[in-house]
Image (cartoon, rainbow, N blue to C red; front, side):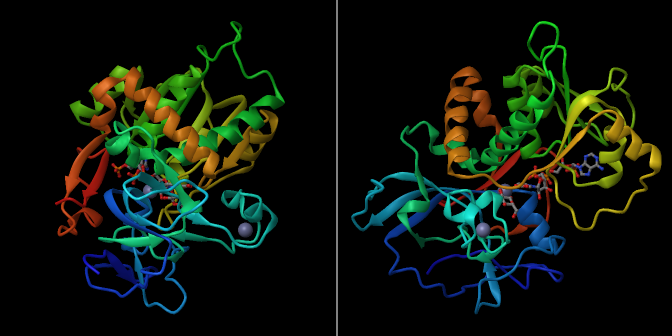
Amino acid sequence: MGRVYSITSPAPKGGISYKQITVDYENMPVILKPIYTGICGTDRGIVKGSLNFAYCPLGYGDLALGHESICRVISAKSNKYGIRSGDIVVPIVRRPGQCLNCITGRSDNCSDGDKHEAGVTGMHGFMREEFGDSPEYLLKVSSDTMKEVGVLTEPLKNVEKAFEVYDLVSRRSISTDRFGSLSEKRAIIIGTGSEAFLYALKCRDYGFQTLITNRHPIDDLKMKFLDTAGVQFFDYTKEHRDESGWDLVIDTSGDPGTIMRFLRKTNNNGNVILFGTNGSAPATGIDGQDIDHIIERNIFLIGSVDGARVHYELALKDLERWNVQYGDKIKSLITHRYSPDDTSVFTKKDPLEIKSVIDWSK
Ligand code: DN4
Ligand code: BGC
Ligand code: ZN
Ligand code: ZN
């Protein structure tokens, strides 16, 4: 069975444990061994007990964690998806229920909530020495160069999905500038975690003037990375860079007060993507003027979660392209590598972290 990161009673109690839980997988058609599993705000939120939507699989009092991973196929029964022993794959997190969106391949837009997510909602995750899966939920990674940065496929697929929604809603008006581009349009990303960095790269691909902000300064390594990508950082508690307003606001903090601060400076026909989730964030006040501002300026609020297979595919393509465009820099997004024996990564976040991964070869 080997090592499994699991937690008991995800919410409201929370708390990481490191024990052997028995999950039968031997009869599954594909057996996988993780190469890397990534850690993000969702894992830490579950461990802290602040994500009330997390729950254990039916019949279990524990949940094996892990939804971001890149794995080696140890063995595979013959299948029509071309998954073979030795392949490198990224497993899909969300598993469909019975609603129309789910049965048509868009469980990211599940209509009744009756889906499951590995390591999050009712399904054991990938932070296990070995686990089993069905081939239809595995995405083959063809190039060996993606073995490392491929672990970013899962977090990036969320960004791809959010931009699919952005593409749809931004068509309601002319969203480009006088040159027909976005070079005079301004995007702001709230938060400086791994998802925020991926959003920043995507905003640059779109051609936005891209800024990223937090309530404290960030270290030189992060600054250097942002500099390479042409993204500006500012600490909003010290500086104001909102004189000409925002055309796109992307929140990864989940903090209502901070969201409102930037929403109040959103331009006509602006879009606000709400992405960060933090059930323990404090309440904030919204008054009539805020509502008027949203209405009179045609501001569109987008809530976006998860992504479908198509977004995993887009994410892989973007990572391959960025790997060429930014060279080794893209690898530097993975700042920390932990041994599976070290559970501290779930409760502490090193200020220098962009993406922490567990290296299962350790
Ligand atoms: P993360 O690394 O915890 O990033 C959150 C960022 O927000 C950190 O840089 C925080 O800074 C920053 N932050 C917190 N409060 C504030 C504030 N008041 N003002 C400015 N910045 C603030 O998490 P992540 O990058 O892995 O994910 C971002 C969020 O998206 C998390 O809440 C996830 O649960 C959520 N998420 C949603 C989806 C989805 O909808 C997918 C993946 C993640 P500091 O506290 O670290 O200094 O599909
Ligand atoms: C995952 C998504 C998932 C979301 C909410 C995120 O960390 O990337 O696939 O839908 O958490 O559970
Ligand atoms: Zn994640
Ligand atoms: Zn559904």
